[in-house]
Image (tube, rainbow, N blue to C red; front, side):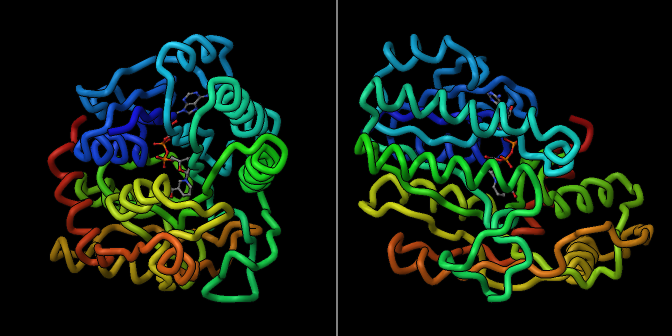
Length: 309
Ligand SMILES: NC(=O)c1ccc[n+]([C@@H]2O[C@H](COP(=O)([O-])OP(=O)(O)OC[C@H]3O[C@@H](n4cnc5c(N)ncnc54)[C@H](O)[C@@H]3O)[C@@H](O)[C@H]2O)c1
């Protein structure tokens, strides 16, 4: 049993991870400012601090709780917000992250695991599926600051010996997803569909992404604290899925057509994204268990049950 901090533990991925860690018998503490997370997602067995990751109060929490591991998931996750206000994104995602790192060092945390992004860090990669060795050319402040924090993790390891692993997620989907977030297309389409509302599709729908179910992501995160391997690991299905495929899968699961309004493509939108999962298999012994069709069914069931919430 370990004492584990999950920042962003009231959010979509964070709360799923907290459930997983608690089911494994760990003691879990959550730090979250509830800007997009929900108290109702919090596992009742977790100790909760409603605090911003940029706060000076963090030191007291680290001193009191004495964490073996820290999962850093709290973030400003909206790419469009980062474009509109790069300083805000930097403040939360870089400087907030540094506040976590400084406390990890001061209070001798054994390892930090960071939720980074494969979708926003590589840019329009030539290599598909994209490996961790591909050059990184993020095209948003969000991607830039995720990459910046990755570099800080490596720096803290090289200079101070703080152990870390970085997971670069593909587009994560599943129950509890915040609909305003990064690439939440499954959440948005499903939520609108179960409410009988229209969704917007930008461009021809042939743009591709790699989708991975949140339960598989939580498992990858859990495994990551047990390995002695630094650096970056992609977490995705390794399959290119188009927006049209997503529409089709949702329609197949619902047994009816969904309402879509086609709008012009967004300027600068990435055309293709798909992550190689070879390294995850080699170093993390991780393979996804949930195929897209099954994951979409689970998401629809959850959305129906939580329609008015
Ligand atoms: N969802 C995806 O497809 C995806 C893909 C790649 C990476 N990620 C990363 O995974 C992590 C979790 O994302 P998610 O999809 O669960 O989003 P989410 O918005 O549901 O979770 C983020 C959580 O962080 C909290 N938070 C935000 N700013 C904070 C602050 N300043 N102080 C304290 N708490 C704060 C929010 O309240 C929320 O609970 C993020 O770091 C995100 O960048 C997500």
